[in-house]
Length: 124
Image (cartoon, rainbow, N blue to C red; front, side, top):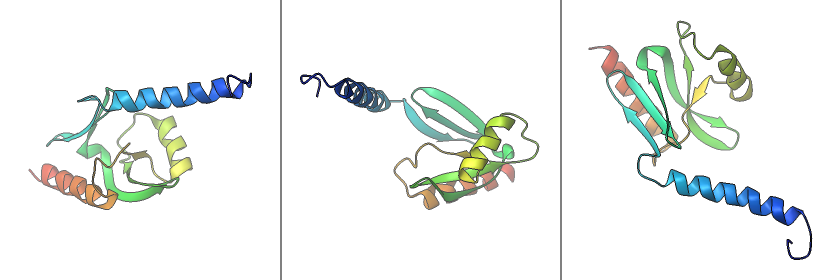
């Protein structure tokens, strides 16, 4: 397409080039992970980390986000951060939050693991 002078060839090359770059970066160790602790869970995607306390989450479940089955959750009423973004997410998906990956597990299994961690951690 590029050789024939079609500008769409450049757009296609740039689009898939960015996708390939994201894929390569995400393959680096510690670029993407889920870490569970007694305090909560930390999600890292493309080296960006986000921590959420167990106390801030109502529950975890497997749910559809577009065509993907993911772990979704809603925050407690006491969680006051990201109010605007939570409303947008809830409008689009029916839930206020989701994990970006299932980390090699089925979504329902990961949701149960996280529920167990939350219950165990809050009962201590």
